[in-house]
Amino acid sequence: MTDRLVIDVALVRRLVDRQFPAYRALPIRPVELDGWDNHTFRLGDELSVRLPSAPGYREQVAKEHEWLPRLAPHLPLPIPVPVAQGEPDAEYPLPWSVYRWLPGTPLALAGAVDEPRLAEDLGLFLTALREVDARGGSLPGAHNFFRGDPPGVYRDEALAAMPAGARDLDPRLAQAIWASAEQSRWAAPPVWFHGDAAPGNLLVRDGRLSAVIDFGTSGVGDPACDLVPAWTMFDGEARAAFRDAVALDEATWARARGWALWKALITVRDTPDDLPARRTLARLAADPGA
Image (cartoon, rainbow, N blue to C red):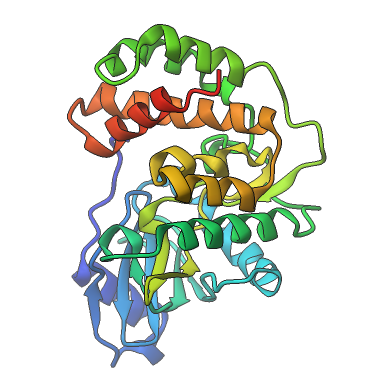
């Protein structure tokens, strides 16, 4: 995405001071691990400011403000709590958010964790999310890059990128994984999914999962996209614990492999030495399910 905005502490300070003068005395500082879709800053000790990094992410702001307070009471772990919504202005053209700060360390920065226990905690969280009443929820679309649709929405891109992943996954096996992913559809009513259960969006404390953040790609539809951590994060006992906790059928797992394959392939296509993406492809090779 080429239209990314320049967002820094000075800009956030001006936005906060203009629109929320009650927070003028609170210091602003960058977070240790920032995101791609949004930039996040600490606002004092109890709050955070989150700003979309490009116009393509603007719809996520209203979605989170509407749905996070409605989802939170039904979930076993904390999720972000919206406090206020900032408005576009002459200096920053998009809506933005103030949230309660959630304590914890992003899994991507954490030290040792109990991986099977964390995998089970994540699986149970996603299962609880799936069980929340989905009526009126956001259907797949540009706001979440079509998470919740069948993986076939990215068929052409995935097939074209298969040669790029050949160092770690034989293209013939990749084609078989993809073919299996396209053989089914989610036949039940749409359910809630997170859409990006990645290490940067999972907070841990004392080695355990303590909160789940960044619901920008959430929505209602096919939950297969939420099973991707089975190959992006987990091995062995941890993968088995995650699989047991989410308790979904083999067809959904096949579609999930398609989602994991697509994302890893386009990543190595653009960044051939991306180690996490290459590990995902290696895990898919070892556990093809096709």
